[in-house]
Image (cartoon, rainbow, N blue to C red):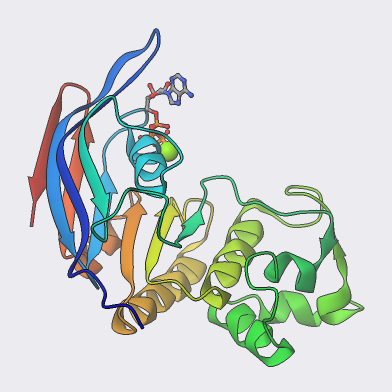
Length: 219
Ligand code: ATP
Ligand code: MG
């Protein structure tokens, strides 16, 4: 196996401007070690999702430097749980296997359990073969989010990006997700989470508060 780079993320003087919108990220510099949890906070529109897009290699910064495990963003496999959960018109199993085609049934059931969806699955007449409709049609927003997190748990990756993973969940479901995130961290995953949830601060090694015009990093 390839030696892993000790630094998960190196960002130096990163800026991002959208045409017509002006600068979203003020020059931002930070480093994140492997296995650490970075919490991104800041008001709506402050650039949290945009920063995740940069780290995923889905967009290029306007200026500055960004390395993911010492390489250009996009060259390392990662899990990216979007703000809008991605659910396709297919069975539970097919939705779970989108990023992990070889996941066994037992592994899928474990992942479903880790996100607290076992009771809901038990109500489905064909179990994992029950068909789902796109988001909003057969799952609530929070259920769709948790299914997307279960999919992420099935995909072997050491870098996990989560965009508001608990935004539409009740307190009990949120606790379940925090426990799962903690577990991922204990397994050595690097996690970058955009969230407003104060409970996540306890899990975070580093917090960056994004703001228009000014960016504050704290550890
Ligand atoms: P939220 O908490 O609402 O999810 P956020 O912190 O994730 O917000 P972003 O989605 O990164 O914020 O957006 C940052 C700013 O960039 C916003 O002002 C938004 O309008 C703008 N923006 C985002 N995507 C685009 C785009 N594709 N084109 C132009 N402007 C964009
Ligand atoms: Mg966002």
